[in-house]
Length: 194
Figure 1 (cartoon, helix red, strand yellow):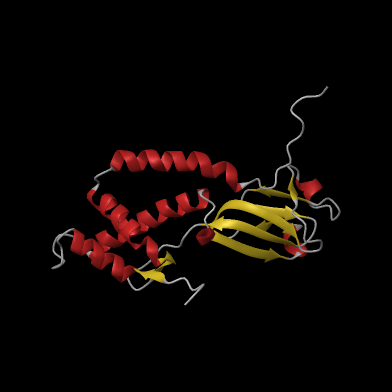
Figure 2: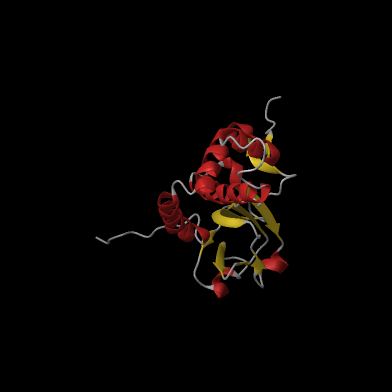
């Protein structure tokens, strides 16, 4: 089957962790402990995949002009911006730091502030999304080739084997993600003038 992404059942990840930790009898770790470790791994992996511009985290939302003129709410799973495209022209829009400029229909600009998107025309928001939290009966929304990765990192989280490394990784990811939440398709002016 070409082009079909097979998602990873959480029950399969739990079984892999239990086997690797010699906890087949389910005595050492509860399902809650394992699920907590898996969800933390998903959050960490989601951040990393977004920073790597992975197609597994791509999302899009279409907004009519009536919504973005007054400030449309960004999606709940919004992490970083890929681009904003005008529904009328199909062209990429440029960011501005002014709501008034953004909401002029001819400006070709958008503005993001306080988790709201402003523009003067209908737009398609293309963004990187966070992967959703999962329950035991769910599947993780990534291809199955990441099973071993998720299992290994979940084991590290579960046993607190690399607490300092994970804390440092989270801090580094935050430094990289936060600026990408607002600007895409930024046109830089000349750095100097002759």
